[in-house]
Length: 278
Image (cartoon, rainbow, N blue to C red; front, side):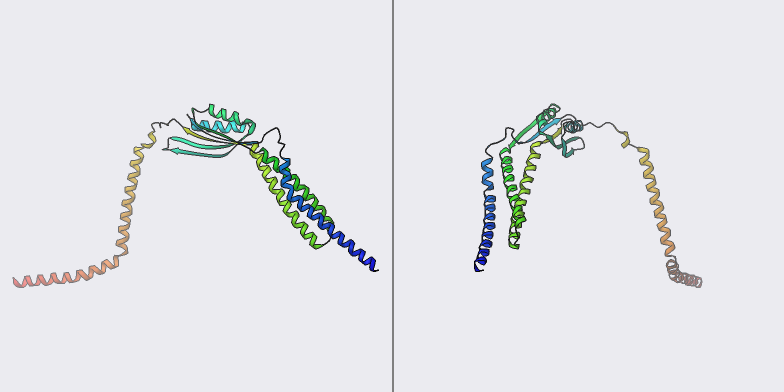
């Protein structure tokens, strides 16, 4: 019986040691995944991944016409407008900025069309960022992380102890978070390389001359308006005067009596004195 008990303890200890050893191997694999990714990224694909950006400034004869034509051309080749700003100077001259996302295969042709439609190209700047190595490195890292994820999921299914379940779940969560970050970065690079950003600044070189507009004269209308304003003011004044007199009539009568009666008495006394003198 003692031998059987020792044998069971040994087997349990061996099982725990084997599980712990496997976990350490997975952790080592996760730590070395970045180095493996760097080593595997030495062979780059033949087609480079480049993010193109262009910034051009154009002088045009008709701003609205040029703006409409650029938007139409972008939609025609599968691009789209992401920003549109228009400014007006002195209600005559127009200028603005348009930002397009253009499929990379039509990048050069769109720039050429925009420049040909302009009266003058005042500034042109085109830049490219090669992200091929970064993308390949991300791919390798993603493969390594997914391998670690699969290994941890198998351990999670086989684990029986609560301590092991918590440890494996924590490691699995971290690996899945890293996988999401790598996937998000790869999607961003793919979108940036698939569509190029073109910023076009437009400025109109002609000043619009307004025509003669007799709508601003309207002499008779202005006379009638001024007459109505004066009549309304007069009616308002008369109405206010009537309200003032009628509303204060009791006070006016009282003041008249207070002041009038003494005056009448004084006048009668003066008349009596004058008769006596005669």
